[in-house]
Each structure stands twice: as structure tokens, then as C-alpha cells.
Amino acid sequence: MLSIITPVYNGEAFIEKCIQNVIAQNCDDLEHIILDGGSKDQTIEIIKRYAEQYSYIRWVSEQDRGQSDAMNKGIQMAKGEILGILNVDDYYEPNVLNRITEIFKDLTVPSFVTGNCNVWNDSGEIMEVNKPKDLRFLSLVSWSSPIPYNPSAYFYHKTLHDVIGLYDLNEHYAMDLDFILKTIQEANLVYVDELWGNYRQIEGTKTVSSGNENKAKQYRIRILEKHRKSLPFLQRLQAVLGVSVIYKIKYFSSHPQDILPTIRVKLLRAVNKVAP
Image (cartoon, rainbow, N blue to C red; front, side, top):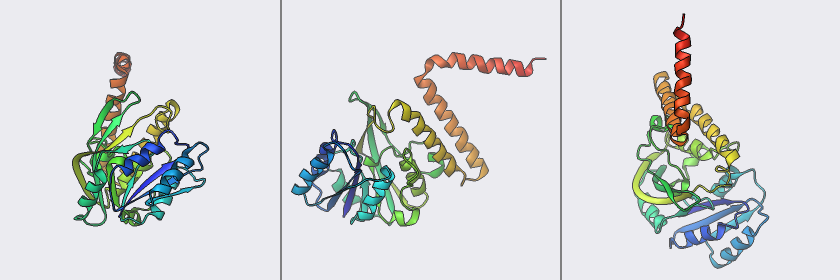
């Protein structure tokens, strides 16, 4: 069985489309577990309406300690041997869940399988297609290869949590990254070059609001630093330099006006160092 877990809080704008997206998969061996954190809007009413029509929808509504806590509750409730996390504002491509069921029939346990993911902006434009082809640990902790971007495009055996533990309750912005970096050290890894997921970067959500975006980036850097400590010194140095270069490229690509002033400052510093 495949268990899809959806954490939600005050998600009336997205929860119905999320439920409909799972229904449209037409997957027989499935359960959809929805963890509501005590919503104050119409989220619960929408969930109730669909749960009355579809017996495979299981749900609870109670206060939790954040998204990691909600996902952990869903994992503990799950009856399926294969897990997928579908955030309320993300969605699958058609027939993905049946495809996943077929793929996992021949895999060793525990396995982690990822496909490709569209990354959408508020204007309905695809900003990039995440293709995490290289799942080697060093490649991911140095960001020299794309990290699986969103759980709508990856699935794994539930027993993986017996090995690496549940999601960290203290992580509210980078729990996915922490989970993946633990996973790739323990699981059988499979990349499939197919489009499976869609992630919407919506302004005002937890990781995309102006105040939280920088905070989320700092959390990701901290997670990367934590996992790099397990590497030998030279590989750790390589990983650190790789992340530094990538962040600079990303920064200056979105802030081209800062290139010349930055070069000027570095030249002045260099001149001052060699000046008599």
C-alpha cells in the first residue's frame, strides 16, 4: 500500500485541489492521511466532506508542534509500506502514484526513489525543473548537484524511518533537507528521469515570505554544515568551497548591480595588503 501524508493548517485555499489531485490518480492501493493542525478556516469542513465520500481518506485535527510533528504523526498512522509527502499547495502529475507502485515492486528495502519536479512561481510560470540526477552524498552537501527539491517528486519505504528516525521536531524550515541527507547515506537510491511533482513557491507561505526566505536559507546552510562534519577533511573542504561558489553565483545572478562594487572593494583590500 502507498500512504500519502498531507500536513495542513488554515489551508482552505488549497486543500480541496490537493485532495482532488490524489483522487484523480485513480490508484487502488492507497490511503491519503491528512494531518490538520487545528485550522480556524474552512479546511476541516472541506476535509470532512471528502472523507465521507472516499473511505481511503483518513484525517485528524489537533494542535501540533509544526510541520515535522504533523508528518511524524502521519508516518506513525500510515498502513502502507511506501510513503509520500504531499504538501497542501503542491500536486502530482497524472498517474504518478500507479507508476510508483510498479517501480517499488522490484526494489530492495529501504529504497528512496525520486523523479523530476516543476518549480512554479506566483505568476504560473515554471522557474526551473528540478532534476536530481546525482544523489551522491558529497555532491549534495556541496550543492554541486541539485538536491531533490520537493516531496511531491520523491517516495520511500516506511522502514527507512526505522533506520534514520523521524523528522526532527526542532526543524521548521529545512526538515526535508535534513531527511534527504540522512536518507542518501542509508537507502537504496533510485533516480527516474520522469516528471512527477509540482512545487509552487507562493508568496506569503512559510518559506517564501520575505522575512522567512533568508531564515530558511540560513537553516539550510546550518543543516549542510552539520552533515559535512562526517566527511574527511579534504572532502569537507571541497564541500564548503562548492557551497560558497554556488551561493555567490546565485546571489550575483539576482543582484548584478552588486558585481562591480564587490570587485572594487576586493581590489582595494588587496592593494592595502601589499601597500608599503
